[in-house]
Length: 131
Image (cartoon, rainbow, N blue to C red; front, side, top):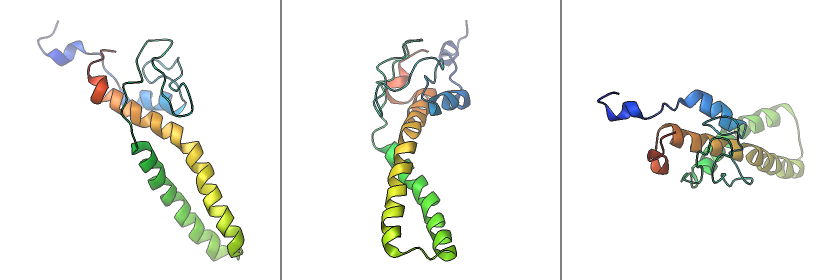
């Protein structure tokens, strides 16, 4: 037994936990589902019991998705517009439609990554849990 209080707390390595969370699995064990709904975290992992409803991700995942979409779509729009002569009406439907589809694809993995980062660093409600 160590004299250091942090030595009694289990390690939470970030990289493998992020890999699991990006697939929608429990970052702690990789077995259970992380989400009960599209963006609603599971109350707890059915395999290991780790509670996920302690997270306070709030709007941060949406901000990350917006930042990523801007960095993906703006250069793509510039390149496509310089290479092709796409009519303005088509572009008015294409780019917002693509943004909505990409945002819907990205939001759950990004939210899982934010929750996993909080869990691995013992932030907010995850500071009290041992596992």
